[in-house]
Length: 198
Image 1 (cartoon, rainbow, N blue to C red):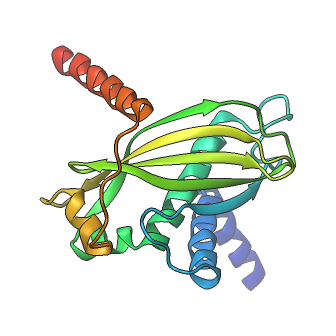
Image 2 (cartoon, rainbow, N blue to C red):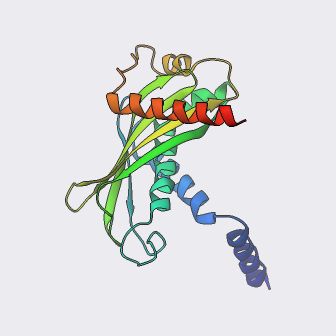
Image 3 (spheres, one colour):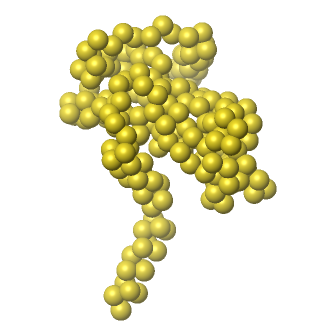
């Protein structure tokens, strides 16, 4: 009877929630805290994965596009926890949301291929952090996909530069790259377009 109840609860959780997502977040943060030393904000962090049958596209040959974005969630959680940025934001009562992302796929990640996702902070301004990610296959070291993430801090009345200085007092904001500036310009154009419609 107890086994049947537990099985029903587990089944209900899997139906109502993406349980594997939450387990993976807990695993990623837990492993990061146990096995990796604390990182500075400009250090590159790394998580590892393998393309499984749950990640593939319709033809069962390589990772589908949605899974790349999901992996970036785990990479960001790991980076923010390892660098202490999220703790500094949460201590002040704030949070962070994904404001935008851009991913360029260079070569597919085939089924059962192991890979790593690297994450580094490349810029910040106003309420936003900008992260750069790379999906690198472990078999040949090829950068399979590159991504940019814009993370917007919510619930705080201070710029993110104050959070950065709290975590790492001597940090200097990097020069913005041409690629990132063009992407920011593109988002601003999109924002203006939709402001005119509303």
